[in-house]
Image (cartoon, rainbow, N blue to C red; front, top):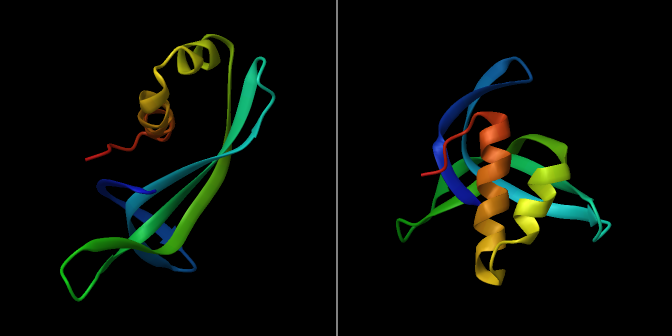
Length: 98
């Protein structure tokens, strides 16, 4: 599930695109001391019913969490780990989740 972010301009193929969604997916976790997460930024699409959905991916990358941050992530209650990692990735990318 992607999270809505404050709009951010990203240069893509000679044009400015506006990213409005962040998606984070864990791609590898050694369950010991590090995990690698795929982050993706998407444009916004407004559906016929007025709901907002991610549309085109305009940026992506991988980010590894380790050390104290990995320990802090692992100490979160089960239902809070996803929010925690989203906030961690957003802070590293200087993105604000709304």
